[in-house]
Length: 374
Image 1: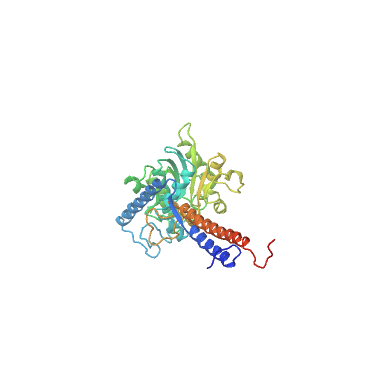
Image 2: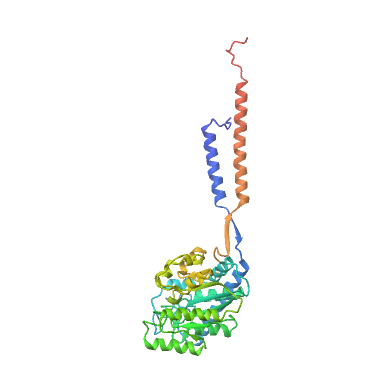
């Protein structure tokens, strides 16, 4: 009868095979746990979904048509390939990625990481280039009950909020009237080249100026980028209550008044930044000025990279269910299964050792019949 032994190559091979199988089982066994802020993330995603539905209703009411090729999820929030208020080229997949309602949970995660509290003031600089990302941020701000001071660039890149009769400020008004947001932009610029619409036709600049005036928003246009930057900072400071400071600055997009230059927008890491003030930039924007005040920065310029980091689907079709992505659920190795596998392996080793020691003891007590007994 075969008896396991440490001297047997078959025993060692069996132990090796058992070890590999048990390691594989332990390594591939996971438990799902809710991420921090799970309930708030779900609420934010649901809020964003409601915001998208409200804007789609308004889109239909105005009689706009949807390009099903560019907007496969039929949200109505993918803009035109060109218009008089289109400031630059845009990446369609960035816009589609931002329309995932679960993106709101990404902002919840970042805001909780910075440890904001209800009632905290946050400064926001954004463009109209990616309505989905803007909605995601707004939903997170509402759920966490923050007090944002927002300055927007109304001009938009391709496929953003670049409809002349349905700008981002128009969208804000719809959301406010339907009770989905408690705030709107405090100031607005044309955007585009030098933040004053350089590169746009005069008709496009006029449309944006009239749109800003119609919404009663402070119009920012000093005639150059540096002047617009200073005007923005004045608005941020004027609207901040005394003895209060901004908890953080959030930048969405590549608005030149916020990032300084398109090169800067790419150099700054997407997500939370704490050390921007330690770096030198040829041209500065509001990001750098807030960073010098020792205020954390959240920067979103490449939405797809951020989505991948948080386990969200890039360019999703159809839109994912609420609560989908590692931003909601984290997978960790199942400690119970790993412990059982370890126990089985130890038992196997102990059995082999016991049999091996027994065989050694047995063989040492065998008397060779040919040996002379004294």
